[in-house]
Image 1 (spheres, rainbow, N blue to C red):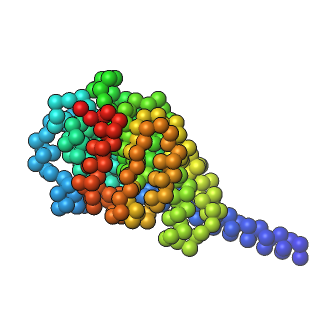
Image 2 (image 1 turned 45 degrees about the horizontal axis):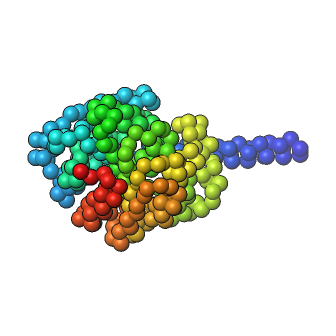
Image 3 (image 1 turned 90 degrees about the horizontal axis):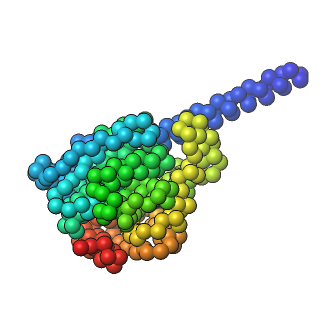
Length: 308
């Protein structure tokens, strides 16, 4: 009888362990290998919406940059130089997008007197990299981009960084982790903490509504990709940033809640500004409010003496 009980118990334990393992692998696959948007789809979408001008891109002065990542692959960037100036902005796109989505911001900064560098995050577009880490490894990549751009424009040239969604979170993590080499930052719809963001998605899109799910996923994420969601927390980094930062979000965003941007704004010390748009879904503040968006950026730059 005892042997039978032990056999049954062992079988149940093995099944439970197997189920946990299957869940852990599937959950981390969803994070690590999140499907990116097809490049042609992004190009067509931005062209139809007149946010990407093929003629402008073909004729503008530009340099392709292939920058080594400290993580062992090449990052693909394009240095756009429509203006005779060293004033430059690095633009970081959101998850699943690519650098074509950044062109609308490049044109805006051109009107404001800046050249720009657009690039693909790891595992996006033309950049290398095996997994997406939502800012953990991406912050190291961005720091490599910043260093390469500084080498080109000079230590005294004005440099800004604009980030959207995951790109904004990556920007905050970079600025709060390394020595600040940028003069200003613009964070458009960042998450304040990746664990909280994942839990929000779980609660709103799945029946899995317990933090235990994230703990299991983190165990496998640490083993498979070397980090946990708790290590991707812009709210822990933003307080170390001293340069001016503009926070932007749309109040209609139900994917990354605007409360996350408001939390980051409260935690940021020193020079800062915030603009909340009444219209626009996630990462669509510029798309839905282009003139007001540019005005907000212009006012921010003027307020802190960052415009000519």
